[in-house]
Image (cartoon, rainbow over all chains, first blue to last red):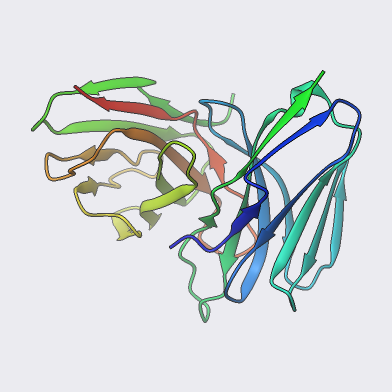
Length: 114
Length: 114
């Protein structure tokens, strides 16, 4: 079952601008992860934020997590044409100790206009 | 060169045929996964395996089968019982099924029924 839902579904911005995409989920989680997918390729892991963390940075990426609102955001600063891709959030649901694998949202398609 | 390899990249199947998609990893990961991705959609979990000779159904296992005879290999068979098999199939692996681990993806196999 898909738990994460990204918003917006598509986003087009000018190169150099910041891009923000959001993810909402429904159940308790152990962590939330963001992945990137270039067209027709596999997914690449970007960043993992644990349920007890509120913010995490990696290069031009900034991720926030609000467990009270069951939401996360991914900010890409100073966007580049090469950032054009689909971005997915994935949740690692808390299931009482077991693990069933990540559940993915439908993604945000980001287009960076040169 | 460590990684996860899927083959073939493109696969065409006639109605009523079974086909097998290959997935091999040399990352020494215990856990492996198969996901299906339809256009504009997120990833849906087909099967996952925590350890050799063990695997579990995901959300959409009907019409698919898997085996895990070796740690490195997790082939997926799309059977004739799968009514709508045309999709992009992604294999992934992680260190284990424990929490707070990232998934590594292959480049995918695009299956088309002709």
